[in-house]
Length: 490
Image (cartoon, rainbow, N blue to C red; front, side, top):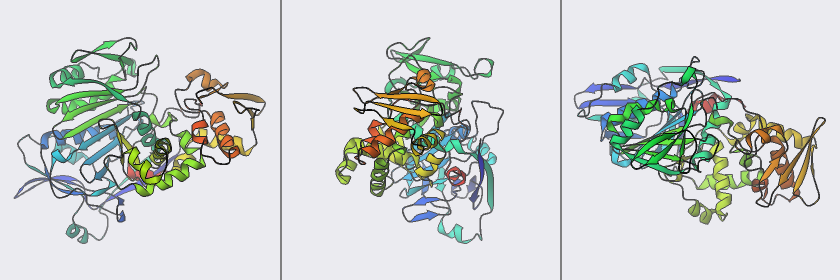
């Protein structure tokens, strides 16, 4: 697994400080993006947290995920969370080291009392002394929050005083992109009141049998959830229930637990689990299996493979401004593109870290991680293999266009398109996953050739095999962080 090194650069460590006017939570920021361009140590907010104890517990939960590996836990993982200021809220995000759990804390306007909330994205320092201090925050303690240094503080430093050097596997950077594609297909499945939420979460196992995570399902039953051994109608997949351990941090503050997921099938699927807190939401999204990271799902490959979507994404990117809620219809009207093309463009922008998806609001949001789709593309073995097939002239479209032949060495694979436009392939990966992990290299290559043959009509994005996949990705590893994007090479 390829890894590169990156150094987070902070003016000083994050800390909880005691002063004459009360306690203050200072979150140090590293380099990031703002409306005025790149900033070494941006400042996004200064004011009070309306509910300090739940906020402190939820921040610890996000940090717990960043420091955890739920698959091969003996390996070390620790990256600093990402924070995005969207003008009306602060979003803290992290990935587990195995890239199988995505955590996001949305601190909404009702949870903040102070200056205007800025716009931009950066990393924040989370260190062990800070974690210990956060555990001591009481419910009646007024807590001032500062995200980033003020201008006076910046001028007193000659340069960064704190550096953290971390290894960054390449595959983690695809996790951000894949989660927004997968989560966009979720629907609300259940909502538990506080008492039932506590009972359910406390009943979950803390570790898988024999050190391996289990996969199960739960089904709504009144105001509760009951386990089931199979995906009956209305069931939600709970892959590796021990991976919800970070929610234990906020149990005593939870107002409700909301569950999101796709329609249950016979196969394990991802799901999202949202703890509703006063003025905040803490969401954990689980990959379909603890040994299966989000970075290998392949949901973004269609949008990476076509030139038409790339041009659409460039246009849509100009219209984004750190909105907390992106309306596809509004972007379609502003850009002149169809809603389908806007969604494809947003997917591609997600591979550049510019788009996330909020399941609670069923809407995309804008953030700005400093890497582009080209880097994600270069790190994807399936896409590289597909381009190599096209360059080698291995794809031949048969008369009528419904079937294509792909020659790989001395083997021939046939890619067929059905009446709905869905592609199937004769390769072993398609036979194993039947569309569960994105298009295979053969289907990707056929889509590229079809787009070129159609005169770059823009149909390529829909022509590439939706739901076909290739065995290009092993279990993923890595963690989320804006610095990770800076450090991961192609």
